[in-house]
Image (cartoon, rainbow, N blue to C red):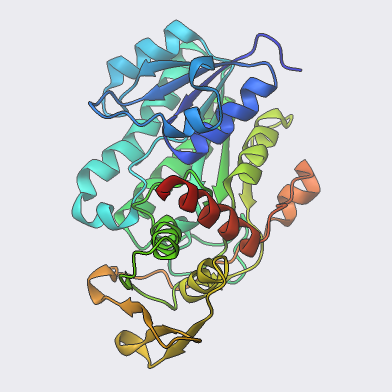
Length: 340
């Protein structure tokens, strides 16, 4: 047990923030959840996991140095998990400057405050498989050269290297988790995976609109967020700060994810056509289910990501527990309950 340890979790309203807070509370931590103040702060994840009244919420803005300073120095956390970000890749093309400030400079603020005022505080930075972008080798490891393909990825690369620089320059515990795509029933609906499972849930309940989606061939290494936050915690308990990839090592396309989603409601998809003309039909009834919509294509696409988590397995003893079909079933069943 980690009795009396204090953790500051930024991005508390996101799926990872909720799952990680649950894990830390179960281990006896006092958890402070940092979130940007706005009129519709979403506490659904904390409520769903039954911990809303166990997390102390603090106002936190990664663009405001004085606010970050005041929060960190007043709480004096043993561990900071920086999960906050403008994390929607598509939005980063439309908001490149604010994405750069939040995802890049905000991390530099945290690092400098810890270095100056609380050098014993450990920091975890949520790095991302989007760092690899135009992949230079497959599968991707901690040593694979980075080639981000979005303002989001570029900002995260800056933050990633600032963590390493502060780790090496000032001997602070700054550790990076390069997490490949991970989903859960708490994923935001602006992400394509949750958009798909939510649509399929509504379809099963009688809403027969077709699913409009972007690049079906885009392929990712998908795991379950609940498994991945365990990896974050393990990284922070390791004796030395380091960089670790968390991934399943299996790659599936958006088409595969869509198939699994419809399979969860016992519908088989038959695909016809190619490119923007490709369509998905119910194999039994012939009903049109899926249409490709080019408006969802990215300006620069990341075609395929596949992670190699061998180092995390060897050094930390971490490995994923949940297969993609199981994960998708969890998400679809949750969305059916939510929409019923």
